[in-house]
Image (cartoon, rainbow, N blue to C red):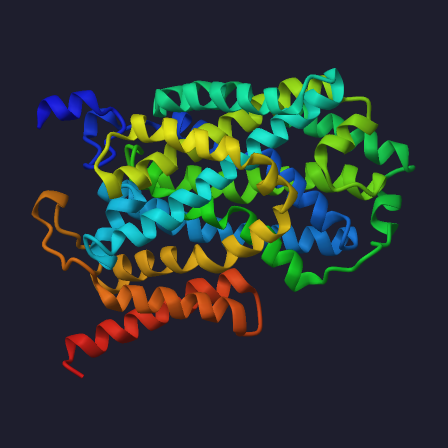
Length: 411
């Protein structure tokens, strides 16, 4: 076992040992690198062109506050147990049942990787005229290479990309506001097609609910529960909000939600290629890393080998995913949150924060109460009034607790 632990520095199928835990700064850098994603700027642009700016701010701050609370709860579980999302799912879904959660979570991260590859390649294509297919292939190979080396490369890339994207975002926002005559003019812009607050909230939460559900994959490396929770909450509430604002201001003033087009019109295409490219690279590494953990839970193949296959699939599907971005977000907001809701309710309510060690765990092959709760949570997200991802989280959590209570009382 010790030899296996030494070989697998990402601990895909085991608890992270104390000697591999990290302090606040490296964890904060990793989580900011995760949430500072150019696709959030694009989602911000989509919401920003569909809402008045004051309504946009309300949707983004409310949405990211809810995301911060959701991911903070998952960060607490991950840092407390030292387990990834996929291993945590064994406690609620069962040994084989966790494969359902792992497959859904992993395949969505492969999809996000594909979106990121396209977002990286398109600005380079606009600026240089290099064949887009060649750029997609090269980008996919480079990003897959660094993801292969795991958590250490994520820390280094994050520490470089986060300050750079912050400076670019501030410069873009300042230029956009000045171009229309100031902040008051920004608030006066009327959207061509009003999305409504509920849709804006759903898009905001849905844009990162899939990644947020995988928070334990990263927080399990935290030295303490407080480090895991605080670094995660700040990253999702403040970091993700900034990315939405960076995308929305330029989009609102130029009437263009695609961040690459916005940067092109602002004359920032070269710095955008460098900085957004590095930013996308960071989050894509996180996506491949997380997807590798998921498929490793299913196949028992070492994570670093699975990463190569996932990178290939994501690269091949890049343009299809990119061209169906809003539909992709809608799908994620309906099927992903139920998994997190079940894990949270199982840990805090059903098991009262008392999980047996992974080596001593005795679970069913499939825990059908969790599977049923997940299915009904997806239905709740689709058919109940309100905000789709919130309905999914609370719907699945409540149904799971009710089913578990009935089972304990032999009803």
